[in-house]
Length: 284
Image 1 (cartoon, one colour):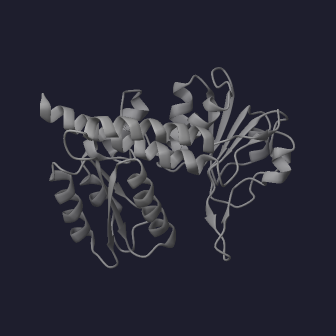
Image 2 (tube, rainbow, N blue to C red):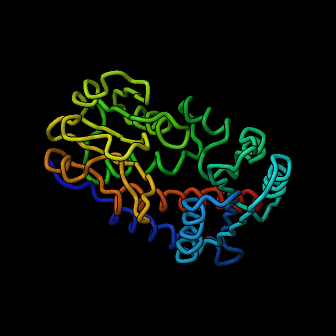
């Protein structure tokens, strides 16, 4: 197989489902509320926050963006603690990276696991690693979903994940393991990367290195999920995969219309699920 792993159509279907479920549950009360915190002035974080705000509105989800240009670890921790304690806030997204010298650990530790929309608290990551139900990171969910929605068999297949971040690489590997793949996790220190990827049925590229993966890395007929989103000087975004080169040999997700579209939908779905638990918990 060769060509494109499509993300737009499954993302649209998931968003339609979210819209319907949200309208039904919020009919007699308030809509879901997602609090997004952007500390500093990272352009990608600000762009994504705005995109979430616009997308959430379409699905009936209120997205409150809190942009703090200058802050300290203590101030940001206090803000997160306040949002975690607010019963009207269903979900919290702390955008990365945080500005220096803010320490991520106490700030993330202040996020209630029950409001952790992107599965980044130690509690949720631990549950994911242990195989228990939890809120899984949206991008990792999107990686698995784009494969399933495009008819790619995962069970019993060899998968290589490049990148070990807690937002993408590690959770993608864990979710692929749940689907019964045999997973190898690679990273910037991996020697002879091509020897690993050439044997893989599935490759997930999340190293953040533009053009890292070419046709020489890929098994003919394999599936390649490109999670790379490196900003370019002209305002564009570069993936980790050389798309034209690799798509002639295998199925590959494009930078636009691939994992990104599904990630947004999965994050909105995570928001709805946290809202549902919050609302229903109050009614019981």
